[in-house]
Image 1: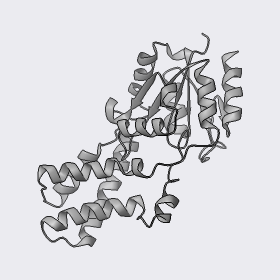
Image 2: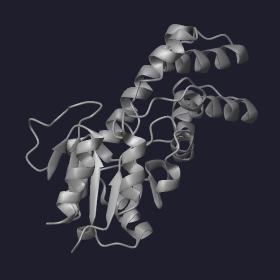
Image 3: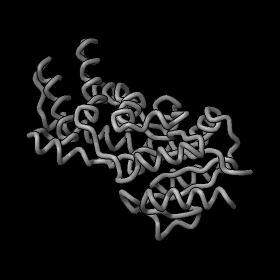
Image 4: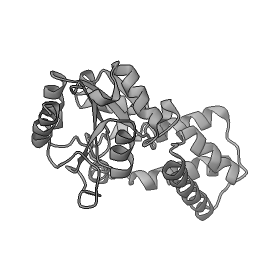
Amino acid sequence: MSLKGVTFDIWETILVDGSDEPKRSAQGMRSKSDERRHLFWSVLDDQAPLDKAISDAAFDSQEAAFREVWHGMNVTWEVADRIDILLDGLNRNLPRNVREELIAKFEEMELRVPPDMIDGARDAIAELASRYDLCIISDTIYTPGRGLRDLLTHHGVAQYFKGFVFSDQVGRSKPDPDCFHSAATQLGLDFPEMLHVGDRDAKDVAGAQSVGMQAILFTAARDEGSTETMQADAVVSTYADLIRVIDDIALR
């Protein structure tokens, strides 16, 4: 079958993870990690005194549990779940409105100071959209799917995608087949007609290929696996090369 659809990861494939941190620092803001810990502790401390060291230890435990579930079970907890786990671990409660405000501050943090887009991404995505149906397939960590879509709108590329698959909305994260099935359904394509682009060999490449898609390991923002990958159909490091490689694959 000919190639008709291309799916994209977001973090380290379209947006540079952590590129907002220098901007936060220049504005005198805490890092996102420190700000989340401070927000959580200050909200609880306002309700009833809480040792910050205890709060930070609980936060560290929650983060470790999240990573274990994410990598081991292909599930990404929503921010509300993470806050509730923290509260349960500390045997604390929050008034409903205070809890909802805290969740919103966590979820919107990257919208207030947006991360940067990888060089060449906007023009390349626009060009690819003229030849292929495009879809996002992205795990969500703190920023939910609706927030990631807002970030793509902020950078002027959301309109090029005909489908959006986010782990908080699907209930599973890559490499779970459900993520790729959702993309195929939204695009109305069969897996052999689709190719996925992402930066993680185990999640993006292996996940896509497990359902019969082709996959490109994209290393423009970070390279974790290009020398070890045994399965990627191609390894690409720039958006200029990505267009050429995708078009070459389409001609096979």
